[in-house]
Length: 451
Image (cartoon, rainbow, N blue to C red; front, side, top):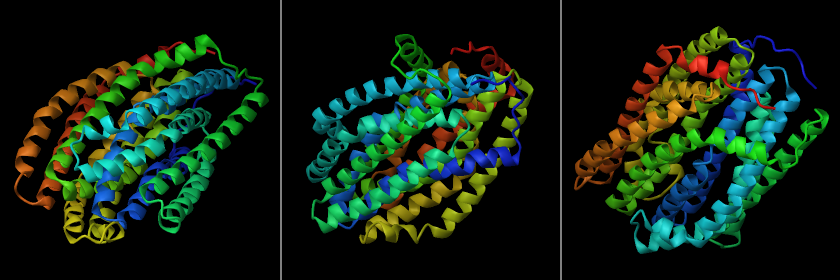
């Protein structure tokens, strides 16, 4: 089932048709954590701090494999742009099989080494116990999380963001009900929150895979495991893996600094990070549109259209950040009430959210350009530039640890977010330099189209 390559339009209607469903689907994962944070937060400061540590480990264990979604989106979209739906699904299937293998391996490592992994952050013994409990339960859902990434990447590459939205909506609703029931109704504590998320994630994975299988059958595509396709998926994803590992290292350095300040700053940082993740995924919806439209444009040989779409989406990203930032400033004293009754934690959360709000326009720029470069297949540049940004962040976070010590929890959380905003500024500078030229668009236009 193939068609001739045709120019891909990237006007407001096309961007919105991809970005709005993508946004609603993307916020599902932070909403899962937000629900868990709100439910667990009612158990006390220590369980909430434990959830903060566990969430950081869990998001790192799965977040490094985000290339399963992002890389798959770009290679599938380029096949679509070249006019081959069959080839698009077949290259995407390699990513699904790779996701299954990596998910089993990552889940085993997470379950077996939960105490060691959670202990890296230096949390209090009580918070560490809560974190280990959450991690061991959550390890069962890691394969499902990676399968969701790969299946979602295929559908996005096919310019379908509505199906992942349906899956995410049902998954979020099920997770919310299960978490409340298992934590407070059945009295399972933090383990109940983990079980609720695991069940919801497996339901999402099975549903999305069923849709991909139907699409493959309609296109007469082979979905069986194929060594070359799995290897190709791994090779395509390797640069994005390096980029993501460096990014996660930056996030973990910040979490470690928060843990060093004590349970109250760590709990507050967990909540502010959850809110930040929600806003980032809102902006990242434009990045998803950028991945799909850029990949499809370059797959059809339309580098000029890809550049025009980039300029358009960057403007949307910055203005989207302005709108989100203003909204967060208006709510920065209201949101903490949803997560905790502790006055010190509430005060620290509110202070951190101010910095998060002010940084949103910068975040909009960075995430949109990141999506465009991923769609162009510019993974190697993204990898080495992120490693350089990581090296630049080391003195920044070191200064934040020094400035945040001995001045109260609110000051500590502000210092952490100022440091993280510094990282975003450095990263944004690198990206501005890259998109000024034409190399990224030429790279995407000349990439081999494997089918």
